[in-house]
Amino acid sequence: MDGLGGESGWGTGHVEDRLDGLFLDSDFAEWYSGRRQAGFVRKEGPGVADKPGKSNGSATWEPGRIYTLDVPGARLSYQVYGSGPLLLLIPGGPAGTSVYDDIAPVLAEQYTVLTYDPRGLSLSTVDDPSQDITVQTQADDAHLLLRAVTGEPVYVFASSGGSNTGLVLAATHPEQVHTLIVHEPPIAELLPDPEEHRAHNADIYRTAQTVGISAAVGMFLPDAGFNVPDDPDAEALAAIAAMREHFEAFFGSANLKFFFGPMWHSLAGYTPDLDALRAIPARVVIGIGTTSVGQFAYRTAVLLAEQLGLRPVVFPGDHGGMFGTPWEFTARLLEVLAAQQDETNEPPRPMADGAIRGQLHH
Image 1: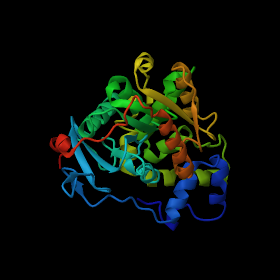
Image 2 (image 1 turned 135 degrees about the horizontal axis):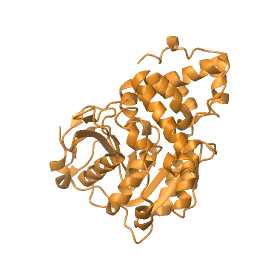
Image 3 (image 1 turned 45 degrees about the vertical axis):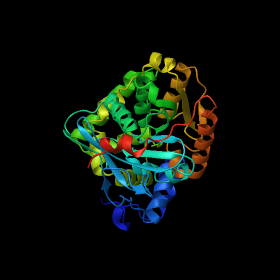
Image 4 (image 1 turned 135 degrees about the vertical axis):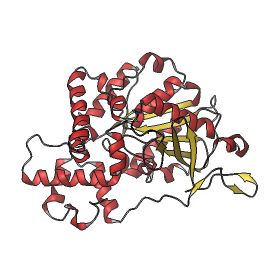
């Protein structure tokens, strides 16, 4: 996609200088700039497998190997690596599994990490791209994926919009979740004035369908943790354009089109089942960023914690903390995960090869 090279408009000088100020030292801006300068390209893995790899006759997962699972109306792409208790990572928004490329290898030193592309994003496909995707469907996909990999309750970490999927998973399939950690779930319906945000979300969708994805991204940036000025000057406009371009380059046009299309209505209008969440045996942790105070998803995370009678747990950085401060963020996540383990709940483990073989597909 255009926008990664020097001709993209990122350029040098004042535009780059203005990014930190415009986006409150945005973790995504810092992280993406570094990845771009390093020439980062997502590793797609050595191919797609229909069953876990073998090593000396024992059941193993091949690190970097991409597996697929057929679910109703879609085919999910996923990876499993590491060893220890099973930890499912749910991506947020238009992201696929690559959003966890920085933190997953560190987590895999202590956990068996399961990552995946949600249906319609990156390597996961859908049978009907015109059909809206509900948060419940996303949660059902996660449920089926977990059933294919393990028969025990697992640890789940979800970020941004993926948190909504995690919340529905825990509410509707509580037997599969030992601990759910959600980082800044964006839930407009919890706000005291949801009508304003509903209108904003409707404008974003309408803009995506009529004007284009790039314009919709520009409207969405504040919701993603970027402090876009109300009345930007020329330099600010250039910096905003550069940030929008890099946002599009990282997530990809196909993912963004699907995000602002079939995924949008259900995700933007998600209302949590608070009674169900209060009743589940799983432990729920609500994460907030140290530098995202006052931002949309920070506010809704705090409101959700209040509704569930929980105290939010602070993570380094802002809404995209795992991008700009991946090591500090991961260290904090490992601390939170460790605090959830006790002697009465044996850490979940993946199934043996025979239990999953029939549920993996080309």
